[in-house]
Length: 135
Ligand SMILES: [Zn+2]
Image 1 (tube, rainbow, N blue to C red):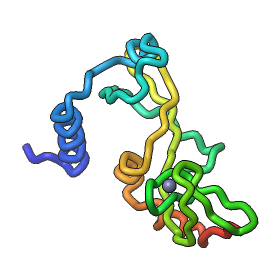
Image 2: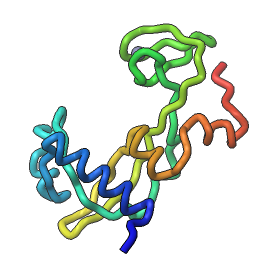
Image 3: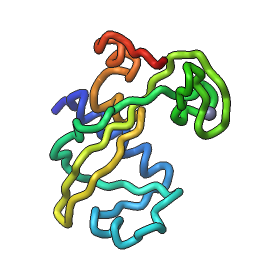
Image 4: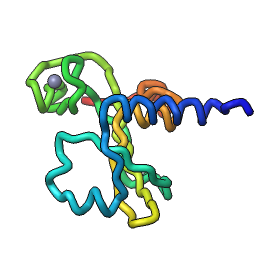
C-alpha cells in the first residue's frame, strides 16, 4: 500500500516530534499542566473542528526574529527585538478549534504548521488578497 502525500507528511511530523523527545498528551492532560506547558513541546493528536475566521490569520513579521512587527506612522518596528524593517515578510498564526477523546481546546498554529495545512506560504495568501497596506 502506497502512502499518500498526507500520510507521508504526517509520518514525517510524527517522527520529527518523537526524535525531539516530545511527550504525548491528550487535551485534558495538557490542560492539567496549566502554566507548566510553556517552553515545552508536546504532541497532541486531535481533529481540527474549525478555523477561527474571526481573527486575521497572518501577521507582518520581523526579518531578524520572526515576531510580530508593529506599524506606527508607517515605521515597522519589531515588538520583540526592536529591529526596524521595511521588508514584506508574512507569517501565519492560524487559530483552530480542536477536539480529541478527552476534550476540546483552541490552539494557535504557527507558520510552519499552517503552511503545511494550507499548502501555501503566508506571502502567497497575502498576495492573493491583493497585498497589504501597512501605512
Ligand atoms: Zn525581531
